Length: 465
Image (tube, rainbow, N blue to C red):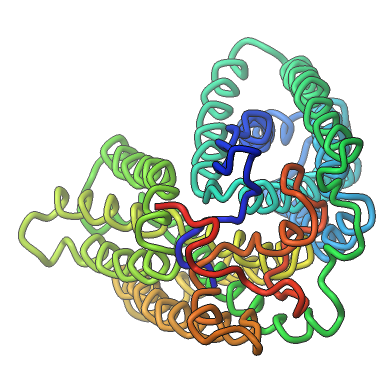
């Protein structure tokens, strides 16, 4: 597993490593995938009234969106392997933006369910292709940018919710969603064209077009690392459980167990959300300095401490202020875990790895509500929230184990022992970058399971200070 996220970038004629470009277009797409759906979510009450849905019917049509998204996750990785991550990303982005108009146009509950299923398919496909592209670009540049990109996604969602709330008081759902779709399509056209043009230019100049079959993980290679990818999926599931448990129950806990008003409880949740976003913007720097494993294990342990403080603050000196501090610590701890899990899954297995990690993470998303509810009814909400701490400690131990297993899977058996051990500290970008010049990442992700001819270079080569 990558310890210090540094890729092998090809040297310029003067022998110096080229300075990596900032992936502006990629960052814009991460903002878009947070911004666009948030505008739809604030219109749920209006669309519910528009189609005359009851609460139970609304629950079913929202479930249609989840089912559509889950179905797409199972095939999106294969689609990316077949057509290339950037092409799929641009098409899915356009499809998602266009589909956002549909809820504003429908007049019946079944039609709303169908439109949400389509949105779920497009959004999940967009997410898989987008994260796979980010893994490739991060590997080619040697820059662990995934936490920052996910921070941009969080900001995009917050801005989208704010803009949507402002528009919902002034515009009809169809007009609001149509404007959002138009802006999204314009962004897709401008920045998607830019990304595809750069990829074609790289292919024309022979700088790794990313279409070579050699960049795809071999069947044997996938079999050797699929359990490691599953391990990162379990880490992502623990993170999803933790995040959604606090998303759904934090305000109730603050009001019910600590006597906070609705406004104060909202501020507490805002502190937690801002801590996650802020922690992600610091994540790339932490990974470069400390490595993936340290950030994973440290983040989980920090989250365990934070949730115990927040959950049991009513029984500790400090009360409400201590709970706020606990939620900040919890948010900082969880901030970079999911981005790292997605990044490592993609580095090991390409789009298939991203898809598998995302698929397993849904177990945590779907299980948290019934588990927390059951434990709360049987015992108490503080004890139920303590299940987050238990999972965090288990996941921290798993992250330590995955470090060793990743070393075993990615090390060249014929390499010098120090080189084999160092494969855990060099970035997973030692895949296509060793067989073709770096520049344009491949659409299949960057597998760390290398052919024997692609031995990991000596520790001194391509290493950032």
